[in-house]
Amino acid sequence: MKIMTAQITDIQSIVQIDCEVIGNSSRLDLIENAIKQERCILVKEKNEVAAFSIYDTSFFECTFISLLIVSPAKRRKGYASQMLNELVRISPTKKVFSSTNRSNESMQKVFIANGFVESGIVENLDEGDPEIIYFKAK
Image (cartoon, rainbow, N blue to C red; front, top):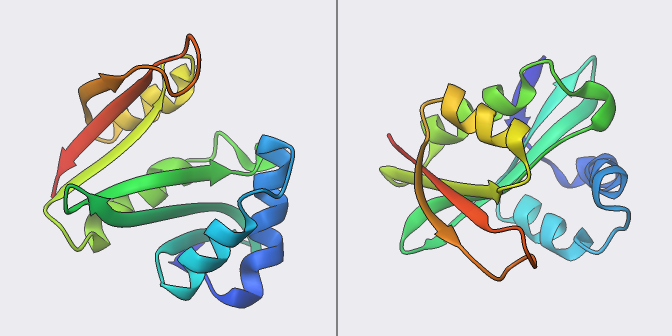
């Protein structure tokens, strides 16, 4: 398993994983821009992309992990934790934030297991499923 900055040659594999999870390729432009700006990291297992994550620093001038996606076939292997730890390590800011829906209990457990703490709730993004914000200091 290797964690690395995504390259444009990885885009099809990344978009394929994203499609498996959300059912469409609507985030292609977002993914492509993140790769070009070197804000996308990925996990490769046996030279195949198994997971990816995108971050930026536009959340109150703090790092915000906006996407963390693991291929459904590659889950429960620690890839989300590995990426979280790497993103905290390489974060250009001292504060790192991310979020997940209240219904996503498995991701909440990943955040807590990796030292993130709840930092607030945002209502009305997904009807009836508030977004929980998580925080970790570098």
